[in-house]
Amino acid sequence: MNGLSGAAIVGMTGFIVLRGLMTGTDVYGTFLRGAKKGMQSALELLPALCAMLLMLALINSSGLSLLLSRAISPLTQLMNLPQEVSPLLLLRPLTGSGSIAALEQVFAQCGADSRAGRIASVLMGSSETIFYTMTVYLGAAGIRRLPGVMAVSLAAYLVGAAVCGLLM
Image (cartoon, rainbow, N blue to C red; front, side):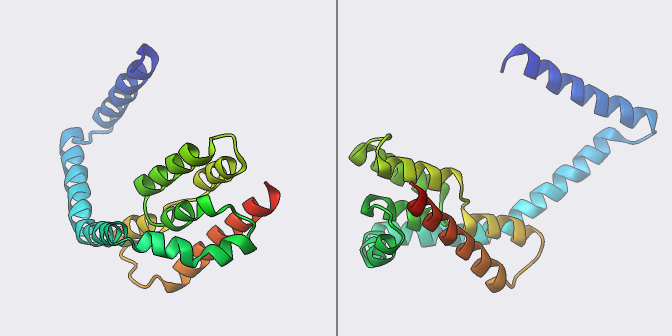
């Protein structure tokens, strides 16, 4: 951490404590209650996150991701996307670290400045790990019925990928 950012953190923390003391707030007690609520939220999300990580591990270790990449090759051809991008196209909605590995594989195979490398970079930067985000944020909000939200999110992701294939 450089000096300016460290000073900003200390300054902001000091401001919050002083403001709380000026208003008569039990700053430390309020902090502890907030930390307790945060821990409770993390514990509530843990089963869903574990299930998602287990699913990803099964998909990767079973070879299903390679099989799915081959299965979606007609779609990638229709969208004018290089075949090397299909593992990233599949993994990006599921996992951030898996999609980074797929991006690195595209760079190693084709080069970062190739058409496939540029498309993979744009896909990576313009999309989100949809299932992870839904698990964490909607799970924290207590929303359990996801089909409509998931369909719209995946449709937007595919439109972005198609535009990427057409414009690059």
